[in-house]
Length: 170
Image (cartoon, rainbow, N blue to C red; front, side):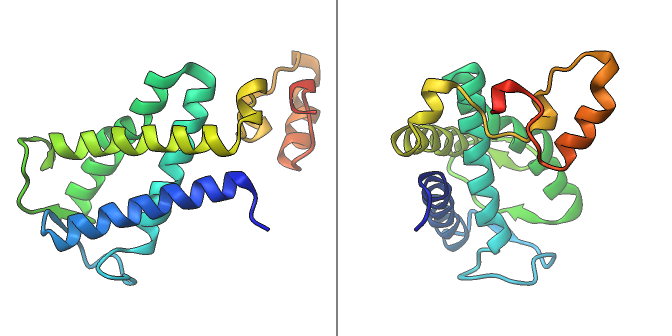
């Protein structure tokens, strides 16, 4: 049986797939030849990216609130995805309904990222409410460990092995 978090991830990725279908078939953008595998013009890795961005929005929401959660996918798109796509040919923009603002991307694209982030927070909140009570993020323990200077080498090794190094993760 699929866990609730995996179900939330899958639902966000499916929403992303639907949006990609609209964008590619509406000729708003096209994916470059870099993507060798596509399903209905959409590369599976892009669908996976939507799931990851939704999960990141959820983690930021748990840690810093709704505004941070909603803006996380926008920041990733703005700072990483659009410049990378522009210089490498991952995708190119066609006609857009809103003004272009960044490497060919439009305001509408940024609005879509915010909407998907809000959807992700809602879905995760509905399906994984236990994380809200504990405010426990599901990042690797290496990111959040707090140990004193004398024990950090052993804590680092334990963390890389996937062992619990903080009572927060117990």
